[in-house]
Length: 205
Image (cartoon, rainbow, N blue to C red; front, side, top):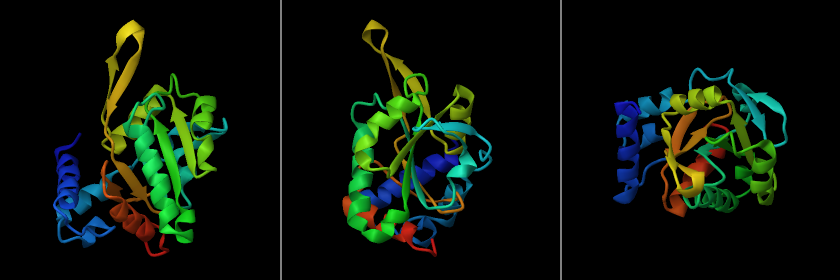
């Protein structure tokens, strides 16, 4: 993880934890410096050509997912807590944000393509009525996407040959052009999530 983006995540989390009323666009928040906002804008670049498979088995490129605002989260379906809680909280916040938030799609990028097949992803997200789309790629493609978003992940061995993953737990908010405009920290208060998602849904975001 680049030092600048590490500072970005810490600064954003600190603003929320201390009760700072951070705006949906970090560049407009008094708690976040212009340098940190500039780091956010650098995320997710240079990966438009990465090949993926969505949870229906369709072949897509990262750029094909543009066209509407998105909330992007990197995780894996065998995750015991953080991933399911994050997706559930996002879905609940989007429902609370009202009809405007129907424009927002949630993209779950698997960090575990060996186990997260299209069928596994489709089954995992079947209860979200199409709002959440799981995608996976090759090991190389996954690493490219993760690096572009400064997502770190590491396999951790468990008993009987099983494994889990330690990984970054931020949610990245992208506008309809695929540009990162904000991020949500794990454990962010629901009201703050709703406010930021409403702003993302607005045509001016």
